[in-house]
Image (cartoon, rainbow, N blue to C red):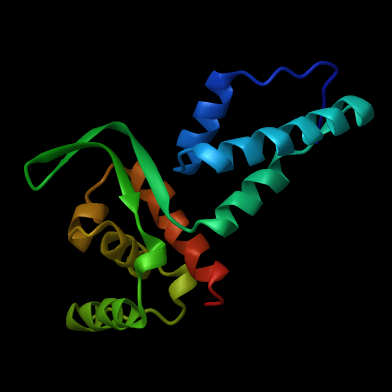
Length: 159
């Protein structure tokens, strides 16, 4: 936790947070968020303490999807990407089984999917609707962040 005397939340900060979490703030949600932020600001000014980790965790639980912004634009199948969205909430049991089958076809096995980099990257690829080898070819910083979001999704679903 961080102690803060004066807190000023700018529109730019709100947009950065929305982009970071892969969400867009619109209509009623924006009004609700502004009311919530005002309450948080009042509490922070009263106590002098701000804990943003709780807020981020709550939002991530509500929406398992993830929009990744690449460090440098990447080219996948001839198309250049600056960002890529991973729709984890659209995955089904068939997707999990398809990843397992694809791994078996490659002669690889995951004893524990939540700690298997191969399983996680393949699952992320299915969530982004790209080939699994495309995720594995990404620069390591991007690969690790995406793979870890797949891990977080798996552990959040009780894997």
